[in-house]
Length: 420
Image (cartoon, rainbow, N blue to C red; front, side):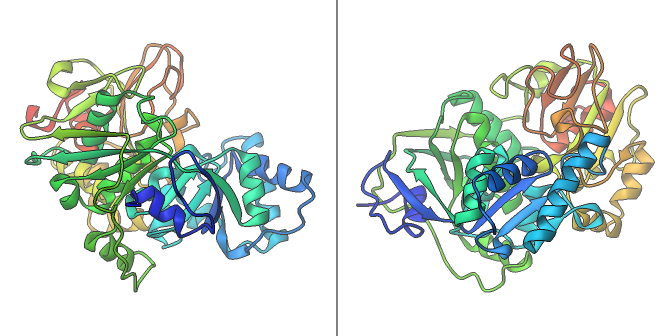
């Protein structure tokens, strides 16, 4: 039968013949990952089930990114548990300290995930890797423990929603805007346990870092995965990021069956913002004019890559962050940090009055380095804006692309770049 991208990738990793959506298949895993919050839970389950060694020390990744550097005794102990397990098992890809970065930027950057892979992670935004054509999804720590021990897991073949994005891409529109527009269209549960498969002329021209941003937020639409075809842009990205020699192409078959097709035309579309307290509460930036903000965050696994840093710097260059606004810049990996230095972006950020921090998830999950107080409002390039996500239950988080976040930092209120 003609296959969707999800079906094709899973078929290559199972001996079962995939005949329909909803079928449960046993899949061989390319990589299993966890972080400093979820890793210790998986390690406890791993030991509790009597496992003595991981299936492949080179295909486990433990990334200490959520509380980096450790913010208190509890987070320090979490890292100690993960560090000791990595030593006991001889795990190759253990990252903390100066070689650590936000996991969902770090792993593609280092070539640890790639086209056609099947990846499971103890983090809901593992779906990021669909941006380079991997079937990647988050699971609970018990499933991750089993994956670390066995190197395989069961997966229910998801039905697929095909998303075609066409039209003329406006200057200030980014992958973040495209994904927020989709979530507005289908809702936060519109793709529940489904694959989102992206295509169309806009997607075909979208840089891989923009695709990774979109795949990252598949979970914000309830999706199991967000998938992009493997094309020349994908192969070029892999060649530049630790996976030279990738020659494969991967796309859905003509005539593949979709549960639903969503068509979006972005011609003339202005940048958008997701308002509290759902990623689906999306409005055009011009509708929110003059709404004051106290904090801006540029970073996270959604928008902490070098293209995001360049976008923010383009807006901030020669300008100053408004009085009373904390503008926090968090490059998501050491490589991104160094590239910012090389290109002079750090000077731009510092001259503008930004706070530049380490490669950490930080305030995204209300962890540290940018917690909101009662009644405060933030514009962030992160992926979630649920009540209390970044601190106080009485605070508000507005989600945007880096260009809107930077413009808002300068304006002191929610603003698009054209409003400066």
